[in-house]
Image 1 (cartoon, rainbow, N blue to C red):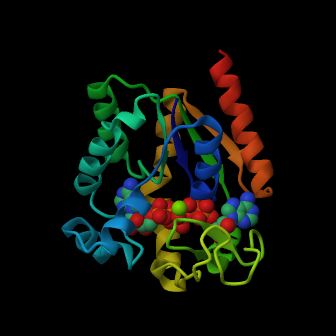
Image 2 (cartoon, protein in one colour; image 1 turned 30 degrees about the horizontal axis):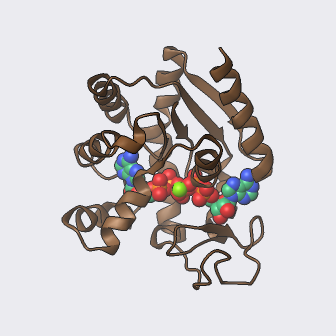
Length: 217
Ligand code: AP5
Ligand code: MG
């Protein structure tokens, strides 16, 4: 199953993608994680992306399209994957259509996770990350021991672009450049909208129920 998770920053795309990847045993492909991993290793892609990411701007479409094309062509995506954070502009959605066409894949569903701005700000300001990829929230999803990852015991940190000015810009960029995709995918008949303000497990169950009913048809 090819699934796109769509929504504003902090809507829970990464949190839900990890749980869905486990349930449906398909890979979680996050463009944000790929770019951060490249930055960690100081690759040309990572250094180029940093200029945009730190300000909360989108990395240029042509940079991301190549990244996604290579990733989707890998054999672990043969039976599908969960795309988190891509596409987020109309040109990216068109590029994805072309890439999938070329690879003989079909996009099954776009899950639009709706969360209002005030909640987004609360979530992002409380988010804490681990180098192993785990993500927590100081109130909504705390680790067992404050500041320490449950999975690997390393200290948690805050993402560079989670500082307030970058977050405000990310929300503005989402509204201007990403929100038009909702209509794009509604017209294609693949859009499912879920209420992202419920608890993590409840949101997960709502998405899983929607995916299961699609699989049953
Ligand atoms: P990216 O990493 O994709 O960031 P984002 O879209 O801003 O989204 P986030 O990762 O901040 O939020 P999320 O929806 O994953 O929420 P999470 O599950 O962590 O992109 C970063 C940057 O990379 C972009 O700004 C851009 O520069 C660049 N980039 C990436 N893709 C690109 C593309 N396609 N094109 C161009 N540029 C691109 O949850 C947030 C917090 O809330 C966590 O603490 C979590 O524990 C908590 N939480 C989650 N769900 C709930 C819930 N239901 N209730 C309470 N708390 C919750
Ligand atoms: Mg994320």
